[in-house]
Amino acid sequence: MEQLKLTKAQEYRAQDLCAKNFFFDCLCGNLIDPEPPVIDGKSYLDRCLESGVNAQSITLTATWANFEEVLFEMYNYFNYISYFKDKLMLVKSKDDLQELRHTNKLGVVFSLQNSIAIGSDFYKWSILKNLGLRICQLTYNEPNIMGSGCTVDVDTGLTYYGKQAIREMKRQGIVVDLSHAGMRTSLEAIEYNENPSIFSHSNCRAVTPDARRNLTDDVIEAVAKKGGVIGLSPHGFMCHSEVGVQPTLEDYMKHFEYLLNKIGPKHIGIGSDIYEYYTKSYWENKTKLLYNSPWFFETVFNRDVKRVDQYINIIRGLVYLGLNDEEIADIMGLNFLRVFEHVWVD
Image (cartoon, rainbow, N blue to C red; front, side):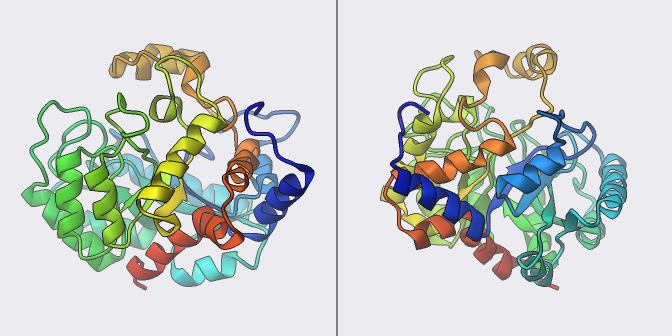
């Protein structure tokens, strides 16, 4: 963090804001299966509890998982949360969110990064909602029956089944997440959705133009116009200044600056995409090959925000940018909570 040096007063303010505000990470990795490593004698769960974060949207399964695999992972989380009931709380409703804010527990919000486990089986939305699913992406990088992912050469847009899914997600109170979707699919989904949509973990293409995962200005403006929120991610391939060079907090903050000028602080959140269980072998032999990525394991994660105990660096960056307390509180979690209050139905 050599580039962003805070004064003693700024550091105190960052620590105070992290301690007193509701902090929601709209896309985080697994708590279990696999469990991230112990660091300095502390488990991942305990490091989360000490980090200042109040709740995380947890990706339940791999993006290619089928319906039965999603149910099995929910079962595993039910057992894990029950075992650590003094430390964890499953968040399924607006009332749960309010209760969580008066505890010292880590809130767990179930999410999926792909809708292929539901597919055209309309009834599965109701089952998953009642088991706790609260956020779901329409697509991952690849195309599916809902629409086109961001890696396709030709984005053919939102499909019949994509529209059907959005209608049912509205009825069930599940937030439509468009991260990883193509730009045409995203625009059509935002327009079709009567509720606000979100991008749980996406950045700005104007700042990092070679990343197809990043959003164009028309998509950014469209989601904000309908009351949605964009969770910005420190991930290397989405916030770098130079391909292959490990990004820093300073690189990450450029995306906050851009959105602040483009759509203002009411439509910005945090979606870290921190996956601490990732190993060099997993990245180099699977993800890197699957997407023909130029990134190596040593550089793909942000130097300053790659572990949950580094959450505080995000708040330090926002303080450094000169945001006031209300703006920082909004970005830390209140903006996403506003969407959940609107979308989640009991």
